[in-house]
Picture: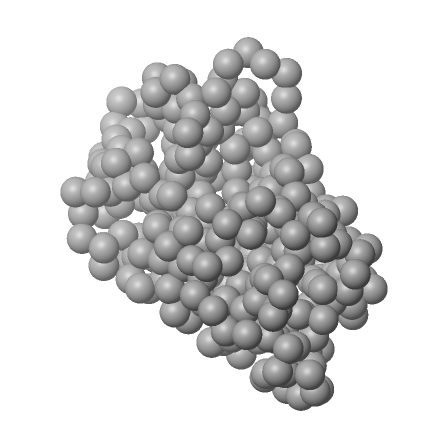
Length: 284
């Protein structure tokens, strides 16, 4: 593996091949991961994954060794996924892919490269730290048993585009990449949007799976501490009584924690570490 490491830009490859390599790269992962073409394209659009900056990893053999997805917003880049086939794990290829991502981000003039890694995935954490990444913060998730069917009329279904200005204006500073409202700029079904009658609170949800997902909930700053957020969440949950709800482990630890605990949410065991590699010389 001295001079045989290559990265083939993903934009040159069929989407089906990208999915197949991703699924092979995440075989036996610490949590189940499965990609299909529709779900992958939703992630590409929402998370601003740049297929020209992402690559298929090879090491001199016919079959690809793995895959690297890179997302970009302004001068910040993010390693959105790095998966290696089982036969290539522990051979140093992951470290080479990370260094390639760092070098190409620096060549673009990016100021930082960030990523998330599941807490407890020690080999991956060690790889990133060796490459110069430092821990930034912990990301956590929550679960909720769901609503009881009452008060469902207090939530009005609206277009996701209608609530985006409220989310952008009211969202807490320091959002993680996947909780940033910009992820929902092009939201389409199965993502749904709801607002209260006064236009003080808005929520984005996805109720298509076994557990409904709360993607975003925000209240206008001038209307906070009046119960608008609590009422809207209760009303949205009431539309699918008995269905459990989740927030994925992408929420910065401490963000909205008091509100979530007060409204019946419980933190889930899975946690992630958000890591950062500064490329502009600034302190982490």
